[in-house]
Structure formats: structure tokens, C-alpha cells
Image 1 (cartoon, rainbow, N blue to C red):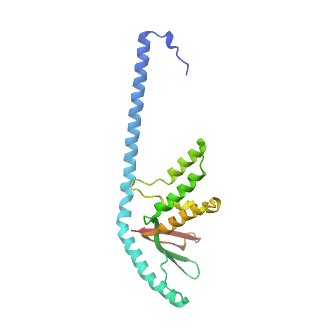
Image 2 (cartoon, rainbow, N blue to C red):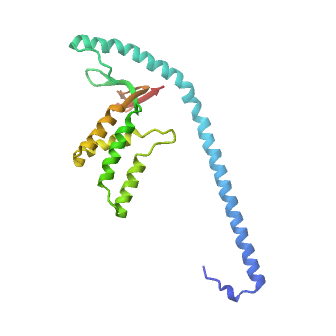
Image 3 (cartoon, one colour):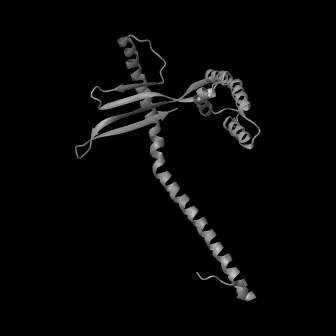
Length: 221
């Protein structure tokens, strides 16, 4: 597109050009709005065409998982008796056919949290990090990054996943203060069972006779 020299245009020509630009901007804005509205309509159509299946299936899935857990409990207890081991509060158990053609794993999804005593350990970690930091801008920036990583959420809770990653720094830190802090944090960590799940697979024969491994995964709260 050839550039227009505005200095060579008359006042009326400039006004016409400005009017055209405003009109094009208005049309683009209306088109963008129309595209968003169309997208929302299509989105809701996809939801309406599919969501009822999952909603109505949820109850039967929940019943199936509860039934599976109940029946598997007999197997879990029998395993303990058969192999001479005490029943443990495992978070998962796997049941597999001898030929490997099907397998089911049942268990609990786990969410780590703290018992409230972790703040003392985190304070020791911060004290250790402060002892490393100097007065250069990079060192101050490092401390700022650390404070962000150890920042609590709006409810005042630390992120257990982020805090737990600090354990990998024990050897590099080589510090009694750091280790004391991490020990406190480790003792404060609690794994909470949040929901039950059933996962597994079955080898099935498709129409062409070729075996295929079909996997599944369901969970309920």
C-alpha cells in the first residue's frame, strides 16, 4: 500500500480520511464482538451436547467405585493373611489378572498440607538464606525471589509442593540451620486423602481382530 503524504491533503481530505479510519475501526470492533458471541454460542452447544452424559453417568460411576472398593477389601485382607503381612494403610492397591489381560488400581488421590507448625521451619530456612545474601543487587534479587517462592496464599497457607522441593537442596546447603528447618517442615507435612479413584486397563479385541489396550480412569469425592 502506497504511503499517503498528509501534508499534501486538504483539510476536507484529511477529515474524510479520519472518518474512514474511524469507520473501519468501528467495523473491526463490531466484527470482533460478533466473533466472540459466535464462539460463545458454539461453546455452549458443545457443552449442551455432552455435559448431560457425564452428569447422569456420575451416579453410576460412584456406585461402581464404591462397590469395587468394598469387594477389593476382601482381596486386600486375604493378601495380608496369605503372605503373612499386617494390613497397612496404603494409599493404593493393584489387582491384575495372571495373564495380564486386565488390571485395576484403586486408591486415594492425595493432597499434601501442613499441620500449622511449618512456619518455624520456614523461618530457619529464611535465616539461612539471609546469611548467604550480601548487599549486591543480584543477591538482594535472590532474596526477593526466595520470599516470593515462600509466600503464602490469600488464606495464609504455604504451598507444600514448593516447600517440599527445598529438600533437594540439603546437600548443597550443608547447613545445620537449613536441615533443622527442613526437618520441622517435613514433620509438619500431612498427606490428606481427597478422593477415591479407580484406574486400569483391559486388552480387548477390536473389529479387525487386533488386540487393543483400553485404559480407564475415574474418581469420586
